[in-house]
Length: 272
Figure 1 (cartoon, rainbow, N blue to C red):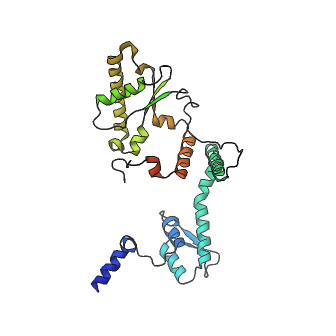
Figure 2: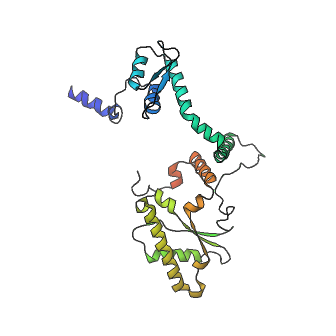
Figure 3: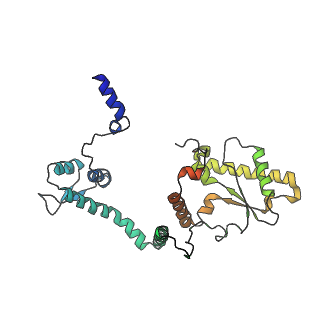
């Protein structure tokens, strides 16, 4: 009765009833044909069948499904057709990583990284090569620098935040080069100021102007900011994007997101 139907609907919530279309076949190969091979406008799918052993070219998914259901296309023929179609789609990508020198170098790095990750560590082995962004090697900052991270942008900046940054910069060893890192990429990831690049850039421009003015007022001839290297996160990353992204992949392979973010740290405003 109605109670049994309600119970069934409750159990089904978030599962079958949430599908946009009903699919009793649950055939992943047909799904690939429909949503990948035939999804671009004007795409075709060629597959051998009983009536066309040399291959029949389809432009409509429904026709493929109908021929499969009536047995004109066997599961093996459907699978072979999908393999050929996917290979054809992937070939330009393979060509790019074979013929483009920059892409070829990046692929070699990724393969080396995978090889090192898979190899068991033996006593006496050399330490595996670590792919990471080296700003000292790239000449962006000096070795043994005293690094201070600028705050994430917000719509209500305060003079106190500028004073706090100056205090952190001053806390470093007098002989250590001082670096202030502007976290523009982190700001976008955390949806600071709606992740708007122009607003983020404007915030940091105001922050730097405030720092220099307050620094001159507080320290006069001993002003700190004239000896501080300003580094924007995006500029630093793009000095060596290949090693940066390999480092990101490495972190993603070894750590869960909640581990990286830490206990009690939620996603940025507007992120789900």
